[in-house]
Image 1 (tube, rainbow, N blue to C red):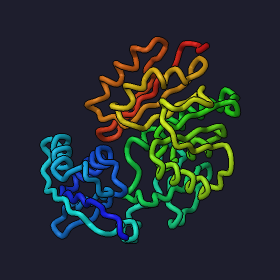
Image 2: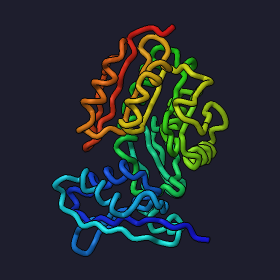
Image 3: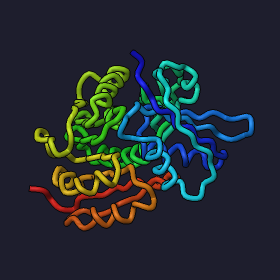
Length: 302
């Protein structure tokens, strides 16, 4: 029996295509997004979501309209009776991508000649195929690279514990592992995301040092204290869980990276987290309309 999918199709000019793709990916968390060039020179964006009776076409359209503002585009939604991940055309859009100073992310079907000093992370999107890495993921990797370099310079990398909250494909946990952190817990409330993470751990020949677990922040009871926490979620989840996240940080100068934040939402997130005693905003990474925040804990935990 075939599984039904909703196909959201948006036609937009080249200048706005990357922004629209990012907004769609952020708002709808589709199983896949692909871009193609039309004969008129416009970009055709197709996003695929498993059919859900609770998410009507009107709901999706209104959500997109509210967040695209004055951008000019055409939009339509259809229902399809096959799994789009069985198609292979989309694979040509997922190429090796350089992020930060030395991280290269690639799918397994793409060959890549590794340059000296580079760290290659193999990520197969599985059902979550698409055109590349979201700006929120890129922002975390850029800041995570800086944090880990700092930990290495302090000669305590072997003691560092990291929590990847909302791991998705496992890309952040795997990247952190390859940069030297071998005590990592990657969690997600989506069973399929955890399964994908486990598959990507195998693809990167990681047999220990990273544990993928199906759970939520609220239900996380074991292994509770971390030197680094990365949470690439959304403000609607980050803010209610702000004290839970901070309470799980241990030691002075522990690091908290928050992503999944639209530029228009960053001020409220900064305000909410800065109100917690001992937590200080250290750095911001802005990519397109997305903001990633790096906080440091300046208060010793008991």
